[in-house]
Length: 158
Image (cartoon, rainbow, N blue to C red):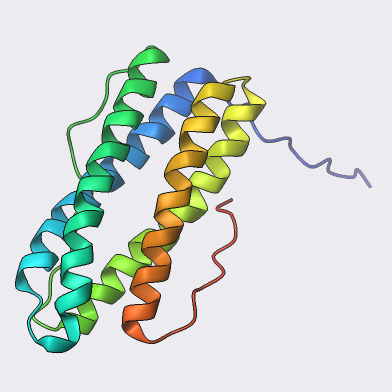
């Protein structure tokens, strides 16, 4: 009986990395839109502080988008202009949960992206993403705190 050998993952290419970075850029655009929207529509004394913080997060996400677009261009790609869809709700807690879910996904992806950049020898891009990751983790902490929950351990995206 023949045994099957596990197939190796296809090698990561520069083109694939550009595609993945464009996915990340789309997610940053999504975050900008969500944070701008939510920072203005969150109502009530319980949400005043986090609403102000979300406006700051929007500016930080814009800076992340610029960094990613720069790295995509440097690698020979064309930065996307299309955001991921933005979820909305009339409930403040839902909005914060949407943001937290997005931050969790972003953190997982950026942790993976650092490894992928290192594999390709794109150490400067990996370093840029590490810096972005620090702020994304701060956003995650702020959102979890506002929701009154523990900060999730999100691991690394496969």
